[in-house]
Structures are given as structure tokens and as C-alpha cells.
Length: 148
Length: 232
Image (cartoon, rainbow over all chains, first blue to last red; front, side, top):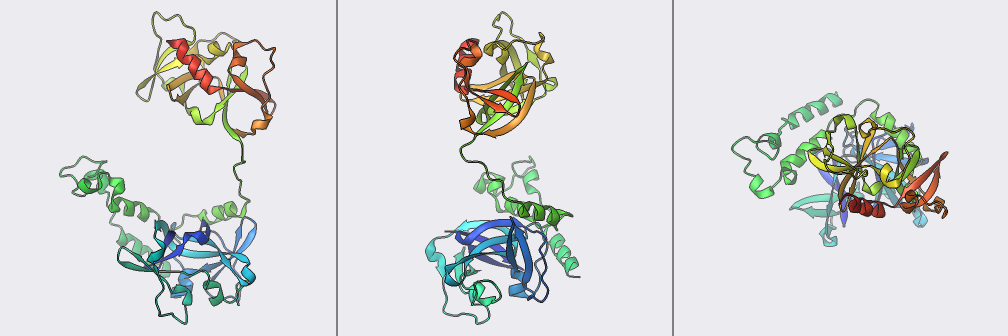
């Protein structure tokens, strides 16, 4: 299975590529007032309005550094009634993908109450990388369409 | 303040190491890089990969976000399915097209050293030319296809040299103008009228209209086959 590696600060995270629609460069986003800090704004993606979340802000409480390698990962997530919604995730150093067998994904028993979407672990060269579970992410960010 | 701290982090991260230009495959300093034994070529080496990655750790250039915002907001132009990619060019008064797959490049004839071949009376074979250090045969498509010259010209006066790649080697031939690479639908190809007796029609797979021009789509397999026969 192909996974995308990226960074939030100095820590590497990953996401499964099967959920990814496109990796877009950083663009100007439409800022919406009175939304949480991690909500970066709306992205005009080929005429579709896509909400974009700043993963650095969500996980570490500071905005992503604006570098060439900072990109928007466009994903599709399943909301209520199995409807699919596009979502953008800003992350740093989005430059690499690797292949991993299915059994490299481990789900530990411990789950963070605050961030259950960061539960799983992938082993890569003896390093542990947390992967972002897209099925759980929208529920944690309850203002997204299709969340609970 | 945050931005400043980010920049200092970058500059401290990269004491720009370009070992590949010194002791790697793009350099010739001794002693050679010890890692080369293992990785064979610098492009397989972590240090080289990291060097490339560091290039992406620069701050966003001005206008970068604005430009990409426009690109991403536009509808995606998808390659039309079932089209043929062709290069359209002109020889004398005739507009011709050839598959893009065989097209290699366009060269300014001023930068070419050409040489005629003595004791060769074949009008199709113009001579040999030096293309990037390789000697290639230069042929005249207008002679082969029987395109009549509006004005008789010496081949050195042609504006452009077109290079094509085939399984049987490279060919260079003069053309007067290049329109560019275009996608055309195969269904707009029309058959060549059977009454046309010119040699050109043999090499033409079909004729299509491009804007206000009639373009003959050349059968490259047959064309290069007969070129080989012709110059032997």
C-alpha cells in the first residue's frame, strides 16, 4: 500500500494514498471569521469549495511554515450516510511516498481522547510513524459537513 | 518573529554540501566518495536526495500562491481521449503532419555543420549533418514526396531542420515552418482522393483540416522505410 509521508513540525506523519485525490501547491485560501484556528479557510479547487485544515495548527497549535514543500493534500472522507466530501489538509515537507505492506499498520490499544485520528502506527525502518485516520478525523472536527 | 526563527532554522539545516560535484559522479576530485562503491551513482545516495529536498525547504516565492490559486481554481484541461498527437509542419506550400512520438527536435540550421556526399546523385539524400556530435543523414522530404518548390532553393537556405527518431535511426530534413504539437481526433481524417497520383499520396495516411489548412498526415513507417531504400 502506498503511503504519503509528511511532517508536522519535526515529526513525521503519514496518510494512506488511496484516500488522496491530489496534492496541490499552497494557494490563497478564503479566510472565514469565527472558525477554529486550525481551519485555514476555503480552497477554490477547480470550482469546488473545499474546506482546508492546517494540520500543524490542529496538532501542534501553530501554523504551517510557508515553504515550497508545504502543500495541500486533497482527500475524500466519508461523512454521514457514506457521502463523500473533499477536504484539504495543509502539511509541511510533503515530498515522499513509500510502499508498505498492510501488516505494517498497527493499531495500539491506547487512544488519545483529544486526537483519536492519530491512533495508528506504521513501522518504517524501525521508526514509528503515526498515521492520520481519515475516517475519524471529520468527527473530531465537528463543523465539517457530514460530521456528527 | 515566527517567520524569522523559521529562516534561521533553514540556514542552519543546510551547510550546502555539493559533494556530488566534488567527489561524486559529477566531480573528479580524489579521493573518491567512499559511498560510491555502495550506491554506484550519486542519484541513489541519501545525501543527494536530501540536497534536492532542501531546495524545497525555501520560502514561497512572491506571487507563487496567487499564481497557483488561479491554476487550481480553473477547470482541469484533460487530454482528450482517443486523440492522436501530431507535429504539424510545412515544406514549401504543403502542410504536413507526423506522429509526435517520432519527432525529436528542431535545430537552427545555422548551428549545423552540413556536408554533401560526393558521387551521390540521389536528389533525396542531401548529405550528412553534425547533430550534437553525431553524424546523421540529411534528406529532402520535398524530393521524396514530390513537393514542387515554389522557388528553387538551396537547402542551406531553409529555415529549420527537423530531427526525427525512428527504430532505424535518426533522420534530419529541412522544413520551412513548424506549427507545433497538436492533438487531433482520428475521425476527422479524410481519405486521400484516389485520383491523386502524386507520390505524396502514397505516404499520406489521411488528410485533416487544421484551422484553415489542409494537412496531410504522413505514414511514418512507410516514409522511413522508403527513405532507407532510397539512400542505400
